[in-house]
Amino acid sequence: MHATPTLRLRLLVLVIAVLGVLTAFYTREVNQGVWNGGKAAWWDFHLIDLGLTGWGKAPRQPIAFSHALHAGQYGLDCLYCHSAARVSPQAGVPSLETCIGCHKSATDKPELLKVQDYWQRQEPIPWLRVHTLPLFTRFSHKRHVRVGVACDSCHGQVVQMERVEQVSSLKMGWCVTCHEAQQADKDCLVCHY
Ligand code: HEC
Ligand code: HEC
Ligand code: HEC
Ligand code: HEC
Ligand code: HEC
Image 1 (cartoon, helix red, strand yellow):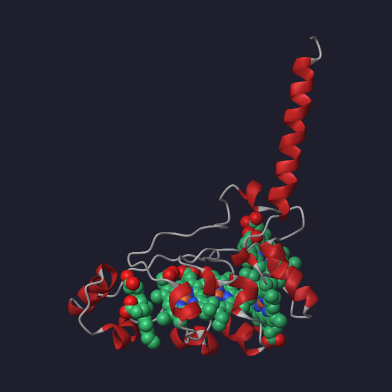
Image 2 (image 1 turned 60 degrees about the vertical axis):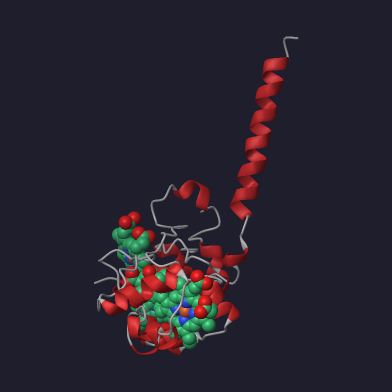
């Protein structure tokens, strides 16, 4: 009978270790194709990130806009709505005009009525930002898009997302390992002001 508490403890430790290892290497479908699984290093994983980087962030938006529907099911190209990504540092979010182009006809769908309300009031939809780098960093979509780095390698399978989620840590080590692998510049001043 004396052994029971230690046995229980050992079992508990074992279960925690197994779960830990599973979580470390677990990738959801939307993580597919992401550079290094979104990790800055192999030991770096979501579980111990503790929300410090915004990894896994997926805020509820003012309109339930679905990428899975628009970009997945209807196959709209990313650049149809994020055309700025090709020519500027920012990818940008489409204007209400882009939405209304397809959604001006009468509807009884509540989410689309909301879109039309914003249009009537000529008020932009207050989308919540998902990805943000600290101010002291420099990033450019244009440079990456032009050399053919796919949106997926940084943002994951957005075509499967009902709600956009940040699937990369966006940590420095994550950026740098890819720059190293693809022989891109690693100079501090490339990414820092
Ligand atoms: C019909 C227009 C449309 C298409 C097509 C589209 N998007 Fe979006 N995208 C939006 C809108 C609107 C938002 C802001 C609301 C949201 O986050 O869902 C957004 C947000 C995003 C965000 C989050 C931005 C942030 O705040 O950090 C990413 C990343 C993104 N889109 C990537 C993609 C990718 C990759 C594709 C192609 C697979 C794509 N989008 C196709 C309209 C579109
Ligand atoms: C190229 C055309 C096109 C563009 C651009 C477009 N949509 Fe859509 N959207 C569709 C289609 C098609 C559907 C599915 C049919 C429907 O519900 O009307 C849809 C469905 C939706 C729905 C789901 C409605 C429901 O409850 O079933 C919402 C919400 C929506 N769109 C919002 C937006 C927003 C916001 C934008 C602008 C960022 C946008 N759409 C841009 C074509 C488009
Ligand atoms: C090399 C990695 C990388 C690639 C490739 C990439 N993004 Fe991004 N994206 C980011 C980072 C990092 C941010 C946050 C930038 C910031 O805070 O300044 C971001 C932010 C965004 C945003 C938020 C709004 C904005 O203007 O910053 C959207 C939308 C977006 N990306 C869409 C796309 C689309 C669409 C593609 C493909 C055409 C793409 N991204 C390719 C890394 C990438
Ligand atoms: C999936 C691979 C990949 C990831 C991840 C990535 N980059 Fe890059 N990046 C590249 C490649 C390839 C180039 C080279 C583009 C060229 O040759 O013009 C580049 C170029 C750049 C440039 C322009 C370099 C110059 O010479 O002016 C900046 C700035 C940059 N990246 C910042 C970042 C930051 C910041 C991150 C992380 C948030 C990041 N990158 C993540 C692949 C990546
Ligand atoms: C490819 C882009 C890239 C390069 C090259 C790069 N950095 Fe960074 N760095 C980042 C990004 C993105 C962050 C913000 C995310 C983070 O804190 O990891 C960052 C964060 C930092 C921080 C803050 C760390 C923290 O924990 O808050 C320091 C200090 C720093 N970098 C120094 C450097 C130095 C020194 C070099 C040159 C040896 C360098 N960086 C090269 C992208 C880069």
